[in-house]
Image 1 (cartoon, rainbow, N blue to C red):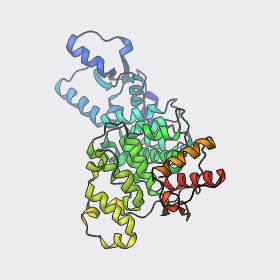
Image 2: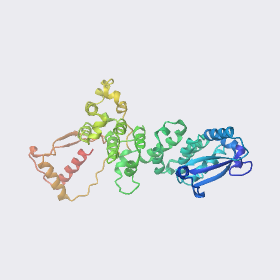
Image 3: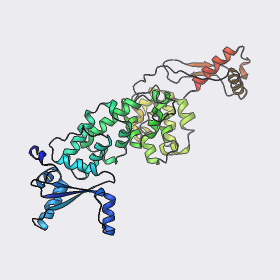
Image 4: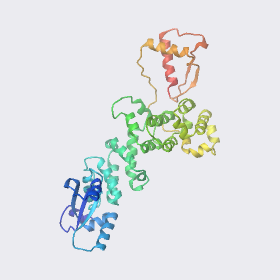
Length: 392
């Protein structure tokens, strides 16, 4: 194969016409028989030996054609590409002439991914290996998030193919580099396109699956992993099966009891229906009882249905302290707080822990305690503690 490299694109000893044609124009030709323009196809000289050695699919076409109509006339074979990807077809043919194709010179990161799909279609393992090398050798900082999204938009069968392992491994590394600490994702409150939260929301279903199943994903509390699922699924037309797949990767018993009962169980019915009310109640019971109950339910239906719920805790987030940056007029804070007291919505919060270190907040503020706030500073302090205490 190394000796054939110099024959790529040359007429010397060429015995094939390789026609690279866009899929939409092929459909038009079959129906209208119109002649394709040069802008819709590329005709390149080819050599049977090189093409047959590189592609099982094209080799079968060539051999069948030769057996059916032996002739000295130069044979024409078609490589069908999606609209706008004629140059990707040219790149595929070039890879057929190289023992180890080098894709580092490609200008756009989308091109190797398009080549991967085309190489799989025409069974060109050399090109598939070249794409894997390109992804593996590209530093994680240089791989674009748009490229990662495109990887996870590929058909699911690609993810299960060992031949594409390096592509998906590189995509997973970029996810971890960019979104791997979920606390930092939600700490990024910027509205600009490209913010961490926007990148999370733009992930395809397969991308979020990878992020939640990856043992490297970091949180301060499993509540954040559940929050990521709820926020991602908001306003998306997601099937119950896909929602259940994602929920199965959230380690529900490690969410706080308060979060399960006041957030998950109060969420729109699609989540509860997809997961099952009984299973969520079991998760809440495990969360309240701790590891002792978890160890006692090895044979429970919930553990059989959702084994991923009972995995060990995720690695700790690099964010070790919750900072509330709340800019509000003191008078407005006083009104809000006294309104909550009047509604009896601030009761004794004993031991409501969000798993930020070992801090536990305890509040006693309400009509039944028979005291009013004596100073603005005390009022503001209690409001901040209330916000932290009820933050989920």
